[in-house]
Length: 349
Image 1 (cartoon, rainbow, N blue to C red):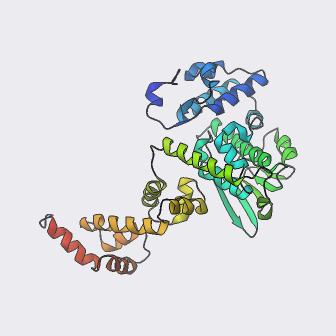
Image 2 (tube, one colour):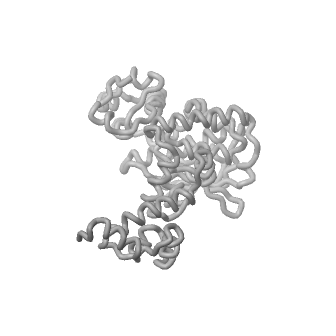
Image 3 (spheres, one colour):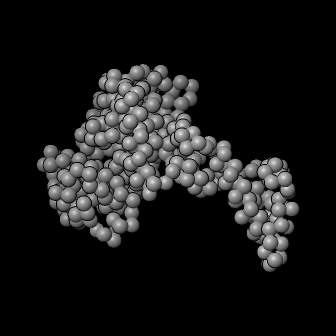
């Protein structure tokens, strides 16, 4: 299972499917280009990459792509790699996408379980005035790899969405955070829409009513079974951590900026997050309030923190709001609670 891995890297890093490198190698073969140096440099040989189910680290994938790009100066390589994708490539994740009720649900599934793919992208879906923005988060490695994965992951998203819909996607426009390449006309012909280069983000814009059209392979029973399997696979990859645990951590990391910030960090839609928490018999509001109560006592024990600073750390815009909330939780003011905590420590400085 661990053939040709570099154990010092692979043992420490989260694993991801090696499938992306397999498809990259197949594309290089098809174009008469060479993948051997990238294989040698990373210790990932073709036998390993062609074996189903193999896992690699993100660092190994980045190193492999960088080596392949250095050896093969083909500007349209990412475009060509993206054309090889279809939903069946992604197993249960792909089937969950294809059997969704509509593209809106399919995109939410894709976003929620994006870690089951080898994508570096996080998807986000925003709707305003009847127009949906399907954006790729650009948390990519710097350098040539960045341009490659932006174009590849955009192509993957568009290809799989089109296949699930059973028709060409009615995209109004696409914004791409890359300089316009020589092969831009290929992408424009394929999409049959306006493509704008040199943008500050990468996104496709589609009218909302188009995303609500029923998918030809929609099947609620199959979809539900696939989503459960996706959830189990994600739990395995995250050490079995529940969504509740992940949300609690994210609330703290985002400094109580709200559910939108948490969704952005976890890469899930608000509807999916609320549904998952409901399945675990809790809610975002309940988790946020519980965490605030827990952290409030920790912060009050630190006499170097003023009440104003504690309120800020807990996401309150006004100190008075924090004081009212704390009194509601405990029946005491924060000042009274601080004196009790300090007394419990023997009044130590």
